[in-house]
Length: 420
Image 1 (cartoon, rainbow, N blue to C red):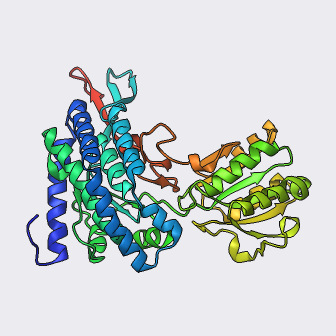
Image 2 (image 1 turned 180 degrees about the horizontal axis):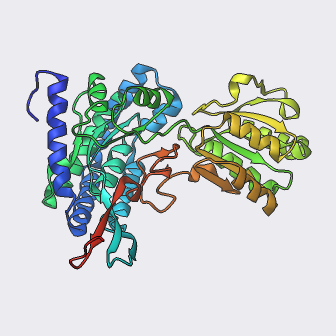
Image 3 (image 1 turned 135 degrees about the vertical axis):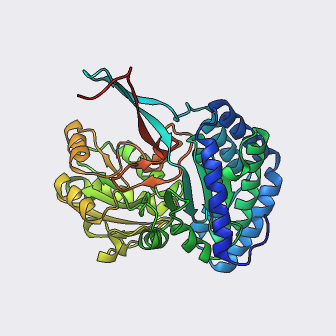
């Protein structure tokens, strides 16, 4: 990339090139996009040693920056995580191409035939923190959906993201698609983010993926439409009819499998009828697994920390969970409605009526019954990967995969048809 004398001129160039690439991608064949993603997957695996070496620089940067263990875990790449990126690229490649899909079709008495078909959004700006694998996921999903993308990874993942991006560009080149279809902002300078948020001539939507601070900044400063991804303040409500073993398995997995992801459980609500038995057992099991429990009422023991008002509605992203008893399912729903972030919430129960009430009364993007909240992931939903989990209600909601990165247009056909 040529040198630029300012961030605005750099970003203007990226925007122009993305816009040009988007025009070509809009009609690129499914076969060429598939070939680009498979070639990118091969390149990632072939260059895994270089990617992991670049990641070591990022880990050193993260340590110097004082990142928490959970955030360092999000940043870290090893061979198994590189394999996960490769699998994600291949999975997205093998999915049906959404562009041109006929969503619905009908005929009018006037003789018109009308189709509503999927079409790319255009140019997508993706701003993300820490997790370098988002570079591959976002690049793949945008390409699959016929969109050009401008990626802005976190400063701590700069080297890893750069190495992964090079593999995606190699895939585009191999498939004879425009290399500008997937661009990575080549600077840590935060001024680039401010420019990206206001590039209304080039960028059609911004997708922020990160913590509350990042999303809040984007929502405040953006002049471009935003797919909001707010905090994952994830609740698990243990109903009086919960199966003890299922509940133990799910709660431990939901909290401890990976504490730094947005689907990790952050608050445990236990029906008062089972709080003294199952509830206290859950707290003890979490503590035995190394989780710090901020508890209230009967769930407290001599090793818990008293829960305060600040613990409700908090995304810990660490080995910490808040816990309290509730009188019944209504109180659990009220608590979640007040303190939740509309991301993911779960009920553990064998009572189908209680599960139905939980599903009906709450409006989170993802609601679960007897399943770990760590499944709140586009890959686990069969989307291959996700660009984030949207918690807003406009356009896309829940895991945002390739299909959610499209809009639609109407194709209207007549036969010399005129309007009376």
